[in-house]
Image 1 (cartoon, helix red, strand yellow):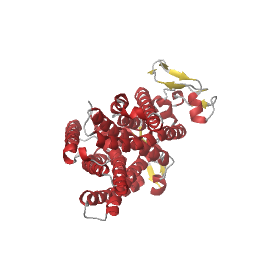
Image 2 (spheres, helix red, strand yellow):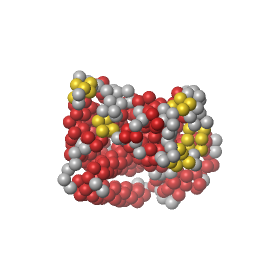
Image 3 (spheres, rainbow, N blue to C red):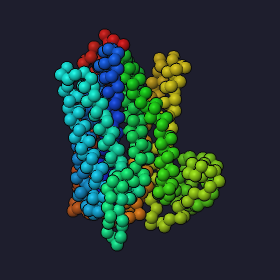
Image 4 (cartoon, rainbow, N blue to C red):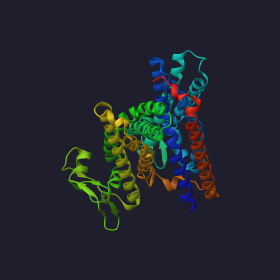
Length: 440
């Protein structure tokens, strides 16, 4: 592994690790706040027990996310100083605001975790809700900075100089809204299906069934809404990519040759040598319709862009197909739950039903990782689309390869620690709360 590859790999590893905790930090506090609200209004002990258990999980993920996020901030300065030198003054505003949101989130979480039986019960609930609001705000602000890299604005680039800087315009660039909505919905879908899947597994194992059934229903309610909204959000994001980053869209669809009535490909193996895709299912005119609303319209292909400006097509295409496939799977499971809830209640007592959700536990986070790959790899070879190349932005540190190995070890250790703590927490649920006398 050369130094440039090591630098890129370290950043990819850090982002791929941190994004999981970011998603959980955005969504999980709302699950906790809803169960807390149900306890306050319905006076059923099971919701109190769920809230207590989930609050411990929120604390674990917050601490781990804070560590991985701090590492990222150091890496931005150490590995990408040329990028930060020029980009920092332009998109620094959302990062500054994200820092403020993070501090408020930390304060609110402290109030919530240590406020039981000490604060007014509704104020206490509000502090938990505030954790979620600040988490979503932080996520949106970070996505705003990333969307600026995909749709740079708020400055004039002339003779290698960044002039007439407008941080507000940079923050609210053309891509920020669609990307922020898409990422927020993805965070809720991924977290909801992961949480629901864990509780479904515990139901199958016949452990604290009443507790886990109530928790499953709360989590999957968020999952149903998010999974059914995500295809609509994805459609808007794809249309935005077609307008602002047509080469990325061409790579996502492995669309090599510009033409009209372009089919939508499902699956397939890109053949770069012969500029074609093997084994794909084609929907005639599908891509033309999705991009322009017209089955016969033209869509730019990779042939319209120099080879040096094209991203790795196979990686982007496979990641995009994986993201879409998993998103549709979650939408299907969401519809299945609605059918069970309103028309086929006997399904809620069937093992096969909970097996489906248990097996889908990692689906959302795999989709998030695939989507992040599409966003970042699909922008290559640019770190700022059309302005600054990635190879010109990185500064190679001496011994970067050893830094990569060190950070890999740190992240593996953090992951093992989190898994151990969560596993211990799940095993302690029947001990901490006498599930046999839970008031449902």
